[in-house]
Figure 1 (cartoon, rainbow, N blue to C red):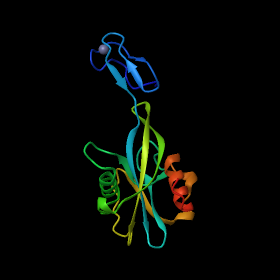
Figure 2: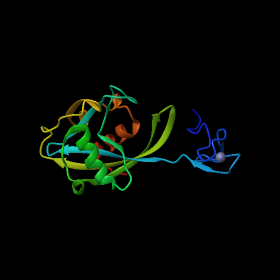
Figure 3: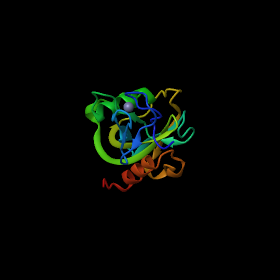
Figure 4: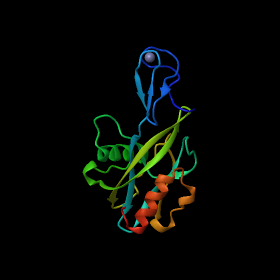
Length: 175
Ligand SMILES: [Zn+2]
Protein backbone atom coordinates (compact mmCIF):
# COMPACT_ATOMS: atom_id res chain seq x y z
CA UNK A 1 0.00 0.00 0.00
CA UNK A 2 1.42 3.36 -1.03
CA UNK A 3 -0.24 5.26 1.82
CA UNK A 4 -2.84 4.40 4.48
CA UNK A 5 -5.66 6.69 3.27
CA UNK A 6 -8.15 5.07 0.88
CA UNK A 7 -10.58 7.97 1.35
CA UNK A 8 -10.46 11.52 2.63
CA UNK A 9 -11.09 11.28 6.37
CA UNK A 10 -12.93 14.65 6.34
CA UNK A 11 -15.33 14.40 3.36
CA UNK A 12 -15.12 10.74 2.30
CA UNK A 13 -13.94 11.50 -1.24
CA UNK A 14 -11.38 9.26 -2.93
CA UNK A 15 -7.80 8.80 -1.82
CA UNK A 16 -5.98 12.07 -1.15
CA UNK A 17 -3.13 13.05 -3.45
CA UNK A 18 0.47 12.87 -2.26
CA UNK A 19 1.96 16.36 -2.02
CA UNK A 20 5.26 15.36 -0.43
CA UNK A 21 6.76 12.39 1.35
CA UNK A 22 4.67 13.14 4.40
CA UNK A 23 1.60 15.06 3.23
CA UNK A 24 -1.48 14.04 1.18
CA UNK A 25 -4.23 16.50 0.27
CA UNK A 26 -7.88 15.79 -0.59
CA UNK A 27 -8.68 16.93 -4.15
CA UNK A 28 -12.27 17.66 -3.12
CA UNK A 29 -12.07 19.54 0.18
CA UNK A 30 -8.38 20.27 0.69
CA UNK A 31 -8.10 18.35 3.99
CA UNK A 32 -4.45 17.57 4.72
CA UNK A 33 -3.43 14.07 5.82
CA UNK A 34 0.01 13.29 7.18
CA UNK A 35 2.26 10.26 7.44
CA UNK A 36 4.94 11.11 9.99
CA UNK A 37 7.08 8.87 12.20
CA UNK A 38 5.35 7.23 15.14
CA UNK A 39 7.51 7.43 18.29
CA UNK A 40 8.20 4.15 20.05
CA UNK A 41 9.95 3.51 23.36
CA UNK A 42 12.39 0.58 23.45
CA UNK A 43 14.09 -0.88 26.50
CA UNK A 44 17.67 -2.02 26.88
CA UNK A 45 17.47 -3.75 30.24
CA UNK A 46 20.72 -5.02 31.66
CA UNK A 47 21.99 -6.51 34.88
CA UNK A 48 25.23 -5.97 36.76
CA UNK A 49 26.90 -8.86 34.93
CA UNK A 50 26.29 -7.25 31.52
CA UNK A 51 23.45 -9.52 30.41
CA UNK A 52 20.63 -8.03 28.32
CA UNK A 53 16.96 -8.93 28.33
CA UNK A 54 15.93 -10.25 24.91
CA UNK A 55 12.40 -11.31 24.02
CA UNK A 56 10.93 -13.51 21.31
CA UNK A 57 7.95 -11.86 19.62
CA UNK A 58 4.58 -13.62 19.88
CA UNK A 59 2.86 -11.68 17.10
CA UNK A 60 3.40 -10.12 13.69
CA UNK A 61 5.27 -8.27 12.46
CA UNK A 62 8.32 -10.32 13.28
CA UNK A 63 6.50 -13.30 14.82
CA UNK A 64 9.03 -15.70 16.36
CA UNK A 65 11.93 -13.31 15.89
CA UNK A 66 13.87 -11.52 18.63
CA UNK A 67 13.80 -7.98 19.93
CA UNK A 68 13.86 -5.84 23.03
CA UNK A 69 10.71 -4.83 24.94
CA UNK A 70 8.98 -1.73 23.65
CA UNK A 71 6.03 -0.18 21.91
CA UNK A 72 4.24 2.94 20.77
CA UNK A 73 4.33 5.90 23.15
CA UNK A 74 0.82 6.91 24.21
CA UNK A 75 -0.60 10.43 24.44
CA UNK A 76 0.50 12.22 27.60
CA UNK A 77 3.35 9.84 28.35
CA UNK A 78 7.04 10.60 28.51
CA UNK A 79 9.26 8.15 26.67
CA UNK A 80 10.57 6.96 30.05
CA UNK A 81 7.02 6.31 31.27
CA UNK A 82 6.32 4.37 28.07
CA UNK A 83 9.45 2.27 28.68
CA UNK A 84 8.26 1.42 32.20
CA UNK A 85 4.74 0.58 30.99
CA UNK A 86 5.80 -1.52 28.00
CA UNK A 87 8.35 -3.41 30.06
CA UNK A 88 5.74 -4.15 32.73
CA UNK A 89 3.06 -5.14 30.18
CA UNK A 90 5.32 -7.39 28.12
CA UNK A 91 7.51 -8.99 30.78
CA UNK A 92 5.97 -8.26 34.20
CA UNK A 93 9.19 -6.56 35.33
CA UNK A 94 8.63 -3.37 37.32
CA UNK A 95 11.18 -0.60 36.79
CA UNK A 96 10.32 3.01 37.66
CA UNK A 97 10.26 5.52 34.79
CA UNK A 98 12.95 7.54 36.62
CA UNK A 99 15.39 4.65 36.26
CA UNK A 100 15.55 4.87 32.46
CA UNK A 101 18.37 6.76 30.76
CA UNK A 102 18.31 7.83 27.12
CA UNK A 103 20.68 5.80 24.96
CA UNK A 104 20.10 6.33 21.24
CA UNK A 105 17.43 6.68 18.55
CA UNK A 106 17.01 4.86 15.25
CA UNK A 107 14.40 5.05 12.50
CA UNK A 108 12.37 1.91 11.88
CA UNK A 109 9.42 0.71 9.81
CA UNK A 110 6.37 -1.14 11.09
CA UNK A 111 3.93 -3.03 8.87
CA UNK A 112 0.47 -2.39 10.26
CA UNK A 113 -2.85 -2.99 8.49
CA UNK A 114 -1.17 -3.23 5.13
CA UNK A 115 0.90 -0.05 5.38
CA UNK A 116 4.55 0.27 6.33
CA UNK A 117 4.53 3.16 8.84
CA UNK A 118 7.71 5.04 9.62
CA UNK A 119 8.58 4.96 13.31
CA UNK A 120 11.34 6.48 15.40
CA UNK A 121 12.58 4.05 18.01
CA UNK A 122 13.86 5.77 21.16
CA UNK A 123 16.09 3.46 23.16
CA UNK A 124 16.43 3.84 26.93
CA UNK A 125 18.50 1.71 29.25
CA UNK A 126 17.93 0.64 32.84
CA UNK A 127 19.67 -1.76 35.18
CA UNK A 128 18.05 -4.44 37.31
CA UNK A 129 19.50 -6.71 39.96
CA UNK A 130 17.88 -9.73 38.36
CA UNK A 131 15.50 -10.72 35.57
CA UNK A 132 14.00 -13.52 37.67
CA UNK A 133 10.67 -11.79 38.26
CA UNK A 134 9.90 -11.79 34.51
CA UNK A 135 6.50 -13.28 33.67
CA UNK A 136 5.91 -12.58 29.99
CA UNK A 137 2.50 -11.74 28.56
CA UNK A 138 1.94 -14.70 26.24
CA UNK A 139 0.10 -12.49 23.74
CA UNK A 140 3.20 -10.35 23.28
CA UNK A 141 6.22 -12.43 24.22
CA UNK A 142 6.67 -16.18 23.71
CA UNK A 143 10.03 -16.41 25.48
CA UNK A 144 12.50 -14.22 27.32
CA UNK A 145 16.20 -14.74 27.76
CA UNK A 146 19.07 -13.02 29.53
CA UNK A 147 22.13 -13.04 27.31
CA UNK A 148 25.62 -11.58 27.60
CA UNK A 149 25.58 -8.54 25.30
CA UNK A 150 28.16 -10.05 22.95
CA UNK A 151 26.17 -13.29 22.64
CA UNK A 152 22.90 -11.70 21.47
CA UNK A 153 22.13 -13.17 18.01
CA UNK A 154 21.47 -9.92 16.18
CA UNK A 155 20.73 -11.76 12.90
CA UNK A 156 17.61 -13.25 14.53
CA UNK A 157 16.12 -9.84 15.36
CA UNK A 158 12.84 -8.74 13.81
CA UNK A 159 13.94 -5.13 13.40
CA UNK A 160 17.23 -3.71 12.25
CA UNK A 161 16.80 -0.79 14.66
CA UNK A 162 16.75 -3.15 17.68
CA UNK A 163 19.77 -5.06 16.41
CA UNK A 164 21.69 -1.84 15.75
CA UNK A 165 20.87 -0.47 19.22
CA UNK A 166 22.22 -3.64 20.84
CA UNK A 167 25.29 -3.47 18.61
CA UNK A 168 25.90 0.12 19.77
CA UNK A 169 25.30 -0.91 23.37
CA UNK A 170 27.93 -3.64 23.00
CA UNK A 171 30.46 -1.16 21.71
CA UNK A 172 29.66 1.32 24.45
CA UNK A 173 29.37 4.05 21.84
CA UNK A 174 26.13 6.01 22.03
CA UNK A 175 26.30 7.78 18.66
ZN1 LIG B 1 -11.94 15.69 1.49
